[in-house]
Length: 443
Image: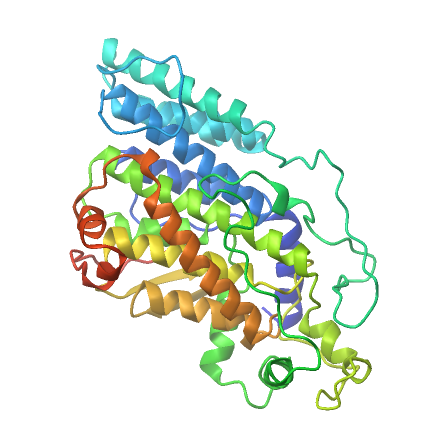
């Protein structure tokens, strides 16, 4: 695939979203939480923030339905839902909940979800437990669909974006294209008190030393014809270029699938992960449109007009791949990576490396945090973000991940997280309970 083709692919992904290959080896007979998250990352196509929202909704419905079906004492996210409590089958509850949410949000793939549901329910013996589980699944799916029906995700205020054209102000980097999702920062978060709860401080001014340093770094290392970018940096940039709203769900499947948690334990883990990622996307777009910062492509092509004598312009400069259609500060990719890694590390530990693929590209990592840093750095190496975009996004992601872990609605955590809750977040590095295989996403 040529660089130009990859550029077209990422531009299309930002508009239309894209599905990722699912974690290897997960079949319908495995835990239903893993199986249905695999279905979502395989078939749910939407713009990345929209995708993250939908996956969070399905995981909330699954968690609360399983909790109700087994009559657990754990807390639920949704309240006042008329559903059977106890005596239900957890597989039936999770499957029906995920099917109902996904078929509503992703109607073009409803047939695939129906096939998955039939296979899932076919593993459950007919009887009262199956009936009660299905009823719980439907009740909580309907409840989350209703609860999120007025969350701002349809842009009821008709928010649009218009650039001032002034130096530093974001302008779309594709001729004739509109800025993507300028309203997403107004969507109601799942676990944060507001989209701006952890908003990063303002970016550097155009005349500052910090801006000059970041400008000259990305101009050199992020150029399509860069002479300073290493082969590994190029590989990283091209590996992460089409990552989307389900990428870190996929990582969660890889690192979690052989953990042996109960269905409720997996439901709690993926509810925390998915709501954290959804809120990271909301918070990221809040910051993006609050600060309206221009992208390196625009900045470098107009560098002689920014009032900074140390930022020489280059009207012909191009990044390694196409620039997404939304403001630069903060990097939501760095934000999502830090959020996902923070949550997964606390639940599953970070004591072993793993390998996975996105599309045709495969990359190996020593652990979750190394993967998150690689993902954040890749945006600078690809020429689509300044270093301070990625640094600020990563710092926000760590805070959002910690907030998702503190969420009490998803029940009592299983052993690794219970250790964390007792000893505090300083113990994140000390949880070493995984002995997992090196798994790969087929791609």
